[in-house]
Image (cartoon, rainbow over all chains, first blue to last red; front, side, top):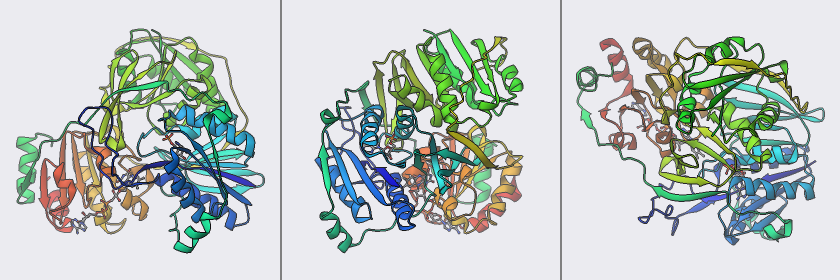
Length: 249
Length: 308
Ligand SMILES: Cc1cc2nc3c(=O)[nH]c(=O)nc-3n(C[C@H](O)[C@H](O)[C@H](O)COP(=O)(O)OP(=O)(O)OC[C@H]3O[C@@H](n4cnc5c(N)ncnc54)[C@H](O)[C@@H]3O)c2cc1C
Ligand SMILES: Nc1ncnc2c1ncn2[C@@H]1O[C@H](COP(=O)(O)O)[C@@H](O)[C@H]1O
């Protein structure tokens, strides 16, 4: 079985981004970029399925500017076999990403597509589900466990009330949650090896997909700042403040 | 402007998130229909009819909808959507699961997690773990929206809407329910609790959470956790508060042994009053806390419990 994993280049999760003074967006100049953490988990899952002999090839795809080849190389250093970059400098709605991925799915015919549940920049949590609708595939979102059994995939999902397990026909879509696995680190020799793995570059036009945005960002502003509070000296004082000052207990 | 809201429920009762979503819908227009999709969901439908500001409750009651499979829910809502200018669902794990399928099937973008309605086509939503708030405008014919419930008050429940059943059944037959393990608790739900006591890695292990439970019992509070506490196996995943867990905004949030990483703050910094108990006075959680107590939690929490 072939597995397609979709990875996004985003700001590193440790960075506290700042809004640009002109309100057009956040300042990403000189900011560390990385693979979206949920996508790292997706790559790890694909690689593990290959190591278990369940998958025979892991193909990684990323859509974005030239620099997202770094994340494709990282995924290949982690064990993916080859990469596809769809190059565009335009910021894309999840719908456009899903449409491009649907074309890749059509070409590659994977048995399983693994995506992150959410990009930590847009916080959209949409692409995998959209890809499901566009390809007619079932989905197991927010996965904390993935098992291939008898031509189907069983996915345990982190839902609001606890855990839910579904059985999906293949081909299927899985989106990863934090507890699915703990991604490995790529070693230097593996980074060297990854340089020789094939990386195909395409453009949205090659797929005939209209990626013009449906959503326009009019303004980006910082959130309301909280007023700095006080340090209390004791539990007594804390309880007194909560009762008489804040009046919340 | 005709607006369709998808109700969140467990067939028997309606979840609070539905009420906040109706409030968001009412800011868009006054013709709001509510869809209850479920299996033996008469109880939820009855409760739905009492929400003020709802014109009509549509009920799709069928075994195909018993476990809210995204494929089935998605196709039903897609079919119904054509008559509406806006389709809204709460940004719960159910809403997040099926709504993007609806958007893609309609060939429209989805606007996730809105916290304010600016106009019929313009909304505010947090991005970058809440470190920025974007105002976005949609040019699509149907606006598909998930609503962050902490951004809107709950609608009143003194209405009496007409109830109409739908006989349409969409069963894609490509996914099936296997099992579920749902947390059983007598405490209030995290997302609707007025008080939350949360524990982090500093709690040390799962047993120590019983200290927080005792405080929670005295305050009628829910118990939450940081990702580190969930990852370490102290508590189940449904207790995680944060950017990628639950978003909460109670009257009082007590963070115990939690450092205050941006991903955690993203889920709780809109709480009215924040208390932090941490032995490290440099912990970032103190920057958002109204009341900070620098102390060992193993002394402070039992003492707090005694004083309540
Ligand atoms: C993609 C992604 C998504 C994430 N999503 C979330 C999310 O949704 N929610 C979330 O919470 N995190 C999330 N995180 C993780 C986040 O970055 C932090 O790692 C996590 O919040 C840390 O949890 P913590 O504060 O419990 O642990 P730590 O950072 O280890 O802090 C423990 C704290 O306990 C204090 N402490 C220890 N012992 C005691 C004691 N005896 N008495 C008093 N204080 C004590 C310490 O001083 C310390 O401040 C995410 C991370 C990533 C990469
Ligand atoms: N530009 C992109 N390139 C590749 N994959 C993407 C891209 N954008 C989103 N994805 C995938 O979709 C997941 C969810 O993203 P989102 O729906 O934007 O929150 C990510 O974790 C990726 O797996």
